[in-house]
Length: 287
Image (tube, one colour):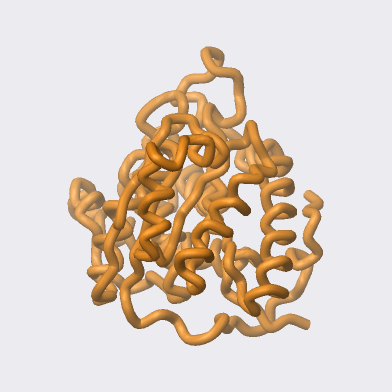
């Protein structure tokens, strides 16, 4: 699989970060679709477990199946997310593009709006997984996921990720030159979900025996482990630190005796996915 950005081909020798990881909680606004917005509650819990005082969800803007452009096109007077940003009380804006519109020019527009009110603001863009595993609606059932070959699914996702990462590279370069830092970062949720499903298929995830158990329906709305995994990806990107070793979010308590081991697996997968992603905001010294 070939990606537009050459950074993926670099050999990682040592991991570091851009500056010191934040020691205080951030004011977060979650704006997106149904594969994204469920991160808000577990992310709050994770920040609390990490003793990051001050982490709050300023607001949520949800439109089912939405693109970033769909949120941007809402008139300013009716847009809760734009109103919140303009108060200057949003530190991190999270967005989630849809595969049907990528590149999505509204990502850059939201970034400019955020920076105008909070020069230290950061935009976290979630790379989501494909609905219906990239198959046609009506011809795919959740149980079909138990036979899905992960490499085939990764190939199906490649065009979306390639285009999105190419756009974020351009935005990163632009803001690096203007602001001297990375303003737009990527939360590699799709890659984390693929790695989780791969482990499930191999019988290596406590409490989960089949890939279909990770999802609530044919479309692919996630069960609790998916929401927690995505939240860990965002935590790692926003706070530039590993979630490994944190306590168990309440969403996983229904897994009983398997909850702690399942939580550890989700933490490890998310952290590895974030470390492996050059656009996550975590820098790698490379050869």
